[in-house]
Length: 285
View 1 (spheres, helix red, strand yellow):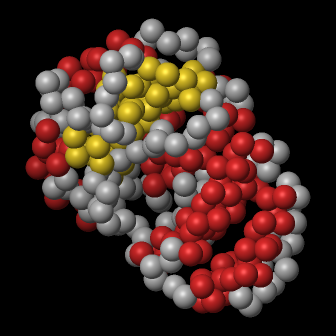
View 2 (spheres, one colour):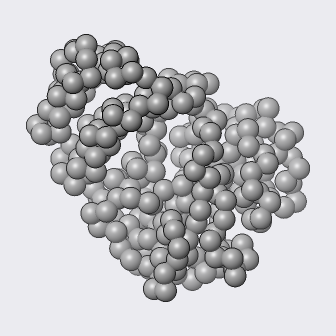
């Protein structure tokens, strides 16, 4: 059966662990050993203290596999396929992915709302919705030298900023690996689940810096830049924890200490920052 891995920390009571079965739950903090031990027998609890953060955990999971496997975030609420048991949902997933060309397809994701009648569709220039529940073709990804990476920004508990699922999607696109969305099967996640590693203030900053890092990494791909640019055009007008000025000052401080392809002029207001961001996009970094 398709192996399912769930990186987790400080969330031993999430709904997923109750309704699913045979998960490989990967923890790396000593404080999690006792709370998660109650799931032994129902799930496989894997403790890897040498792994220092989520990116380490994801890369370790990738290295353990040479076939298709499913990586889930732990805040999955349901499969939105109530007529199927968990085992039947995984079996249905298996039946579809093993009909795909393993030499061409890099990742597979699920529908995010209601399932449709047809089985799957290829996502070409649309990068949305393939995240949180991702089926990876590990052998093909590793043969193309994929590794989870992130912007080196220290947040809470020494973790790094990362939009790792976005990076994975963009990597597949830039390496001509197909991205497939299963449309017959759908999943639902907790939209208000708080981040364990980041407080809200750090998270806003983390996402902005990670987007800038992704712009730099995929600067030669116009469709990817367009996708990231959508975020830049909207986020500064929807800040929850900063004024525009303070947010700009925080971002500029971090940008000024990092070696991007093009130096960003230090500015002291959000309009100047947005101009600098726009120049990055227009000039291919």
